[in-house]
Image (cartoon, rainbow, N blue to C red; front, side, top):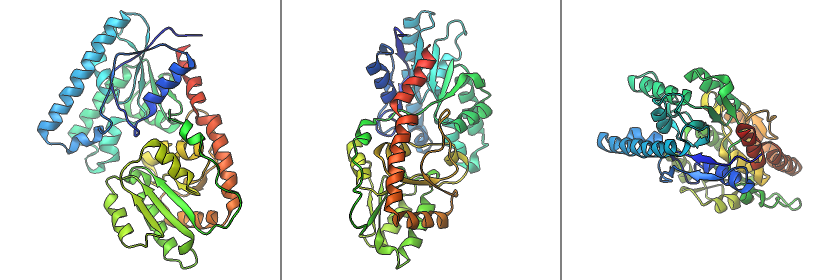
Length: 386
């Protein structure tokens, strides 16, 4: 079946930190499943909505006015284009602004919107980053706005089953109108990464962390486990730990790097282009996932795990995780959440077992192809559009 048209609406996040919408649209267009009509607009790649709270009142108000007016213009163009027909309209993240405006329209006139909500704005701004003010007046206000916006959607898309349950519970959504499916990534660069050599001496095992330095990723747990490893003379010279990225916990890593030998720890503080990230993963023997414990850290399957698995690398991550749809557990070394001793043990054991690393790498790439790839994203969209 071919859908004649898919309209894209709203001001959407863009850049390497938010690849889902761009990659989803590329997949749909390349497959010929839809004809894309873009009546939205990408936001600046450097814009992160949670940072609005840190701006001055004047700059915050100006940013919100721009977001509101841009989404209002997009909504007007969409309404004129669909003219009451049930033409599917895709509203990428952050969909809150467009959908809140659309929610005030009569149901009979409202566009048939398929909405990205894999990161709740309220959860990110308040429950995740500011637990002390999680029940403040501002928090309650944002939560009501997001609930109204999401309830106006025909279908809400999330990335994992745990996030599906969380959105249903937090915002009172209809369970039949929430679907979890894999995220879209630019997979070609990672699937092209060659396997690590099977022969030779393991003089140094390269351990890589890619991502934002935030509590959700368990940065302090990783640093504590590294400190234990590097304080052990039996293991110290066997490892090189490498970090790619920055974030609110950058000062912790900066201090750690300053007190350790560059032979053991290195840090590229700025984000790297996609091809460079693929190359960094290609040079790694072990890749580190998420270790932030319960809560949001246990509800996500972050982009970096997609990248690691697609590239065919051994991965260590916490056992508390969630997955899209019916995907089975991934072939990943799992440790207890927020447990530095468990992570230290996993690192030292896996570093000594080259054969196991290769099996995990091969199984990881096969898992990605079967359960997380662009083909799976297309399957979900065929179901949506049928």
